[in-house]
Amino acid sequence: MIGKKNIVFGFLYLVFTAALGPLMLNMYADFGTAMVEKQQSVGRLQALKVNEFEEGLEPLSAEQIAKANTAGILSLNQLMNTELPIDTIKGGPHAHGNLEALLNIVVGLVISMLTVAVWLKQLISWLFIVGTIMHSGMLYLSVVFEFAWAEALLQTGIGPVCVLLGLIVAGVASFIGFNEKGNS
Image (tube, rainbow, N blue to C red; front, side):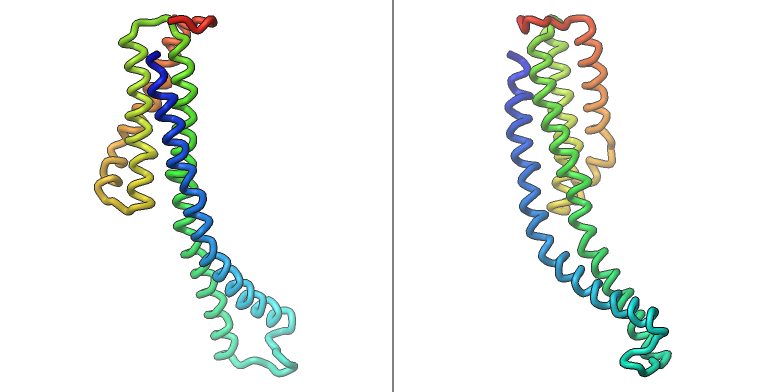
């Protein structure tokens, strides 16, 4: 069965990309600390504004207000800097990797039910595997491990092109040779 390699690859790749979940959870410890710090400094600013920039019934000087504003801005910046790596992993290799792993599983099942030439099944199969590695695989290597060469390969666009081409070819092959009984 030609689709078997896509199914096996898809499940193994899904485990690999899903493993980014615990990595991201470990990154949330710093996020929690930054969130508490932001809440304290911005909360103080909100209280100062409500109390017309008085604290303990004493008006604050321009310098004190500026220092409170600076603390608030810096805490917001720290929160965004802490959140960025998590969001980059979430929106890049984790999401795309999981999707492309599932696509490989589905494509493996579909091409096993097609009654088309073997070379066409092989083409579809390899387009999805190569596309996955060259897209979410390079995202994984460039975002998580910060390999510049992976970013350079990702910028070629070959991964998404292979996946899209695989979808087109699989659609055409399904139209001309879908066998509901699953026999090749």
